[in-house]
Image (cartoon, rainbow, N blue to C red):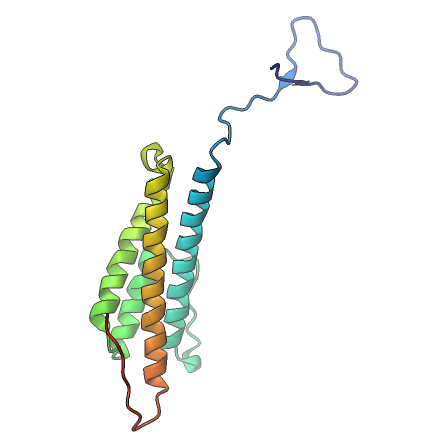
Length: 162
């Protein structure tokens, strides 16, 4: 199949001149790969959003503390650990483990641009699933913290640990 040429309207090409030709360098034939990359990027974005929401729980409205959402995930996770520790967070061990996983995930994000990883659809899916599990862990810790903080005095709390 010939590649169609796009010439400027009303412009004659001189003998030996060049016409503008669009050639696809790399065809977007792998829809599954594109979806996997999108899922991985979305999982990173959701994880960062969850960390920001978790951080907001520890911010005192009177201090007008505002966290810059453009901070790298590694920085945000470090801030979360410090604020949680200062607030006497009950499940600090689990939070620190999740924070360490988030730091590793933040470094792995760059792997997307390497051909060996960026073209490996199963690896992309596995990475996105791992981020979704990590996000769910952080959301669970956050919800548990809110429930504990708002529990009525004298009410029995039964929290399952998995």
